[in-house]
Length: 104
Image 1 (cartoon, rainbow, N blue to C red):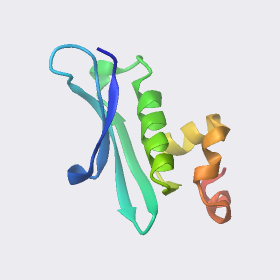
Image 2: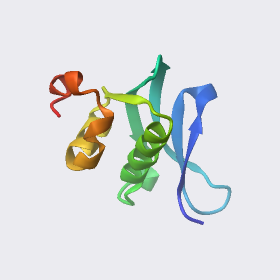
Image 3: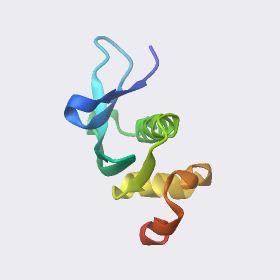
Image 4: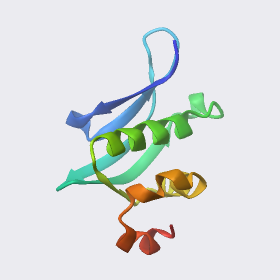
């Protein structure tokens, strides 16, 4: 089973479920949703799943979902902000007037 990213709005976070029995939660990206914007505030991958590229899959899945939903992204979380910096095709999700504030 491939890892998959799932939005858990009741917890205000995206979760990445690792492959294997029971699809265990390997990490999450917490967010705050408000008026057409999604502010990413914290991302964490369980150390047992480190080195598998799950953080990048989580970031891509969450940002793709934000794009599909027409949400503007505010990457307060250093991991999400850094990931966008390495993948400039996602920079357009951050409002142009706020990109400088995030170093994008």
